[in-house]
Length: 274
Image: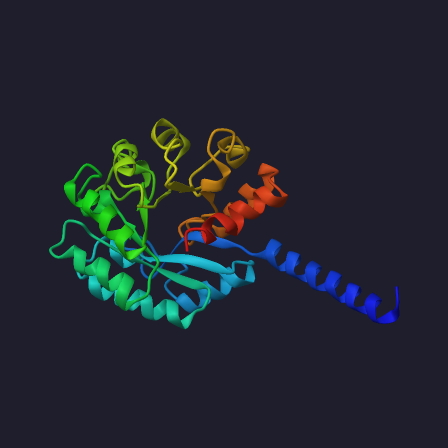
């Protein structure tokens, strides 16, 4: 091998190693919130500081919903402010709120896609007072697919036992989802904060449903989950700032998932939905 060929070969090896290292370090957190939680003070009220915290911990993209979307009725204003906030902080990707009980919610979906350039919308059916059996949810699946939007359904925000006694909401009943997804093959749904009992009863056979692991608990919880849940439909979700971000990192570490399997969960599965 002459000197020129040696240098070219060495450079190619170095570039390939750098690309591999960059890909291994990528991390997409599909489940965070910014703004003011209606029930407690949390660390995402200062979006800039929150975004800096995520980046310091190695997050390259964080899918952010707005706490204000839980109870405020002016969803258009909530989504507009969320979009502005996320534009200021490159790590944050806005996931707009849609409340199916409000008039003209279809226009909120259109604004999210066309005006704000969002790629996902986030629903809180239990706080907004509707179920997955409602005709509006089926309509939303069709409309979201038309706009190329991922639908995130938050199964629960916290255990009923720790909720304010005047504002208690039960977890979302996910039982209707498999039949709905079968009828809407172009729709894509990500269940956030589902626990193993919720998802294993209904959803592991749905090819167009993804799951985050924020509320998958127990020793080896993630490792045990992927024994029955497809790895290609599991994503990294921290539920920060409600949960400590480091908790999600530890779930991955103690699960023993490494290499290509870890990369799928850390960012590749999420990228396939972008």
